[in-house]
Length: 200
Length: 200
Image (cartoon, rainbow over all chains, first blue to last red; front, side, top):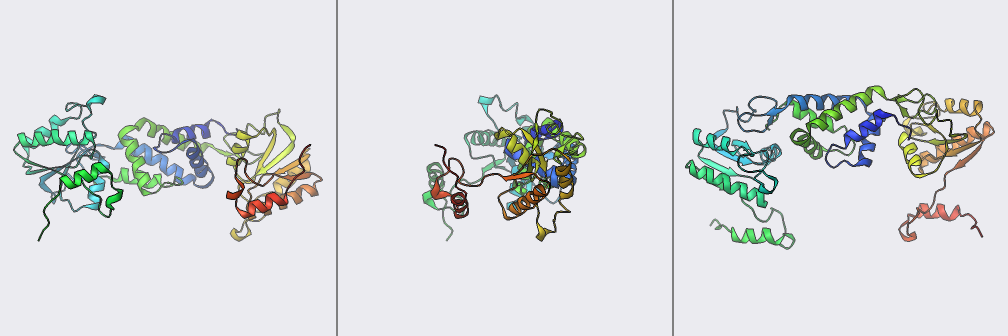
């Protein structure tokens, strides 16, 4: 093939992106080389600066280039509520679509004993200390609706109870706009079991 | 949102990749930051080096980090055949799947009068000089099977004829493995019109 090492190396390096296979990587490399070299250089710089400059917020654990992220240092947020999520992307999703005004705690994972991730590996001691020290009144468990996510939620709820704090789990059920007949049986059973009284 | 300028800039810069929208860009950025920082740094370096180090082959015009690409300088290739393609990716596709042993000439585009791309903009004079000067016996037109690709093929065939060289167009017809009923009518008409005698 009429390509030197640089193009081959670029195609190989592009495959570290999620969802990018050999064909897409080649298409991306040629697109940048033929049509958008300034964009490629901008991406190179953005990558280097982000990989080197982004760390974790010392308080909530989310990705941040500051020692404490902008959410944790925002005094307008209600410090009485603490929402527990698995990843920084979850924080973004909640911020983008809900009116939640409390703080977050990002686990950067979930309990998964089979993968050797227990309470210690997940750093739950730090969360426990925070619950004991700060004036949190309500812990909201927004871990994912999987077996591991549920186990993590139960474990953290127990930590909250030990600190005398009420713990809530976000609701699981039929997605808004979803037709009953297309909803999987597990979700449907969960939705029926978790029925709530209708307001009059 | 709990992100500083660096993450935002990375998400924005990733959108220069073809087929990457806001959701994919965010997923890619978080994936690299949370799970693959070495991969991100490698990609940053590969991008910078390729954007700065890859130019065009002085002879065939394809992307290459050398003054003349490895295909043009390969003395085992048959210099009597010259295959005309639109892009470097076309060269790769032909090299990967055919046993073609001649040389290439990459137009880096095609005639498109509506976009202001005429013979002069496409640098066809250089191709014309090459046809007059070198011992090419056969020009193979592998431009795309579109109106512009066909027009480009006809124009280059005329240049070849002026230089006393035979010009061939790659065959168009029903794709191998394709069922007739799913082939579009234009292709089918082309295939019937271009029928060739069966070997006995």
